[in-house]
Image 1 (cartoon, rainbow, N blue to C red):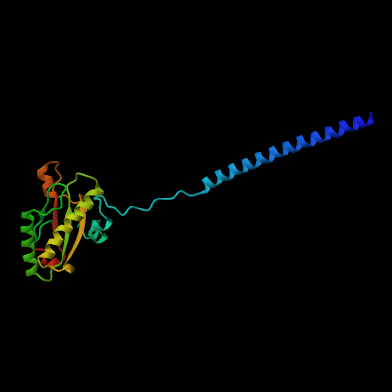
Image 2: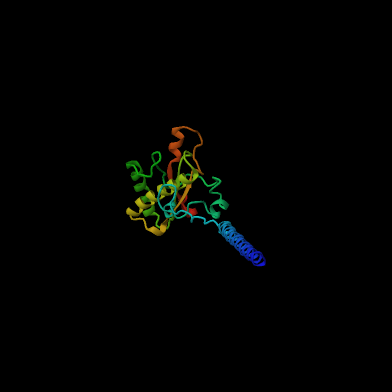
Length: 205
């Protein structure tokens, strides 16, 4: 009888040990699973979001360099009164007009540019800033890009007429300096232009 009891006790002890080992294995697996889940969650929350680099494509679909030499007025323009319109639009050079949403030079525009080139050939000391302007339809960014293309088109044509590169610079004002503020086509036509600002004050008249 003692042997039977001892056998039962041994069997019970073995069963209990196996049960405890099973519980320990389950606990270990559960701990590993929980630890892995916490590690993944910490990794995802700790990784900074990558910010995409700024696009080099401008509003018109070209590169940022198409905006022109200066896309926005410089502090000198502001302090000098150009942005406030204190410098008159007139001068020895005539403005060039453009069609809606275009920077193509018309035959009339080319004739005007030839007249401007003639004056520049006669005044060899003159330096000119070609300003690109737009009407107020479209976004500010798009009009800045379009104004830059208009200024560049006028400048490039003057270069073909023999005016040297160092005498010409460009800037885009977009829709910021309208000649006319009425919301109609006759007014918008006046604002779609390339204006030629003579930088030599003694030659502005």
